[in-house]
Image (tube, each protein chain N blue to C red):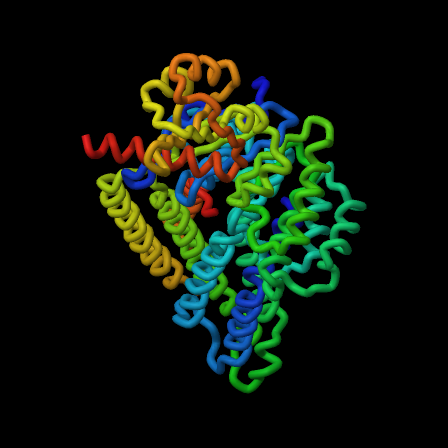
Length: 227
Length: 307
């Protein structure tokens, strides 16, 4: 990891990320009813977090691109640093949510409204799984689409090849979304999600992450840098 | 290992059926200061971006310090300093912060020079990058490039937005860099009078094609404007010189610009045609030479189109 590079990327993402963490923390703390793994707000928050992180981390404003890409980092290193930062920030969010729930902070605020404590407290931890899965899937797909689209912008690619290539990417994006829907369904069936998280869903997430990451790193090696 | 600091072979880049760089062959030996000159849209920036590995050539080869810039990315970037025409640092970074960042990134970084340049360019305490004037922004980019102590300095319109005094300082610094051991400077600029003061080699391109490359002094020694007080046929002139401009400024007068002038050839011309005797011979500066070459190329292109 290159600390100077991490600092550059952190500065891009930090304001939005902290705002997001504050909002999701406030929602979790002040929600009256116990949290469930099907919580729409949490799933939407995970989606937004993944999209936002991928967009901010991998998007360099045009005029700073030549500065960043002429520093002594290889494209590979640049990619893995950025990908690692995105994953780390998502894990930090999960950790914060875990601490908020496991520490009993919700019970402290809503003592009268949570009659099943401490059982409810552990039940509520199942909200971590959809948050993690949705955020990771959104991050990976957004990263892949952004970087693939940038490789397609290269003028070397003839126009007639751009259309089918974009179509294939859209197909895969929809396929990923469909798979993601199935995963959320599988997760939402369980009380304590890890037990009910199907092997297929785990395999799906693993495949999605590996494929989109490897394709993205390949794209990153080929993107053309604006002046 | 290539003997050249920069070497391109048949380098070509095509954007959406538009040829930006067309089979360009450039060679620059280590230790030289090369001026890269062309009109707007000539393909200079595209070429430089390929030298940095930022763009991929459609065909041909490019070697920077003997390496393919796309493959030897990380190691090479530590040896090459780069300033691009539109380069911007992240808006929040201060000049001192940028210096500190680069100190940690480059092993050859010259901290004492960076500190003195921060004072000399009056950048210390000037606030975040986004609040600086255009000239100050250029100064930071130049400072970062110079203090990197790189083997090769690639600069695309570095003096754009600098005032006269700052440009003077900048040229002085470039000369100091060039005097360093085996440092190569590759500089593209429209300010030909500035280039003329510092470069020892010149590459002229137009519409992506190489017009001319060579030593500046040789070029300037060869290019002459000849003013004859009589009509001298173009065919006769072309028997002795490579003519890049030929016209009649007034009835009975001939004006020609030639690329390969020498006294012996002029003498031969005068022997062949007595009316060509005692022409007035003028030397041209780099700007005039460039204009003549571009006009000549455009004229030939128009002739081809008409045919």
